[in-house]
Image (tube, rainbow, N blue to C red; front, side, top):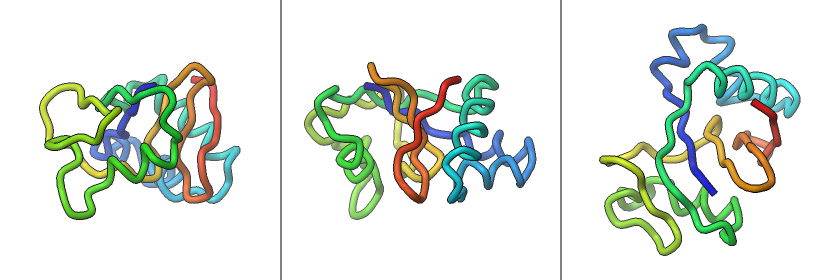
Length: 114
């Protein structure tokens, strides 16, 4: 599985409405549509490889900055790609695995097709 972060700067440049649809949407269909467009447009960058058996909620919790930089001392099953530190994983970020692409929303994971 792969963890992809939204490039906030580029996302905001494309418009506040589009950015908010990715990061604060309570509407799963709207979030999926926005994520598909953003993913195709190159607004995401891959930050980690994740063990396929790890539950998505666990990925989310282990890649957030609570008390430490997750990419500096990654949890078992998470391998950062490139040079960190990486920002905290949050709403609008994407998991890609065998079952497809999923955007993390305020209501949970929503599947989308890029």
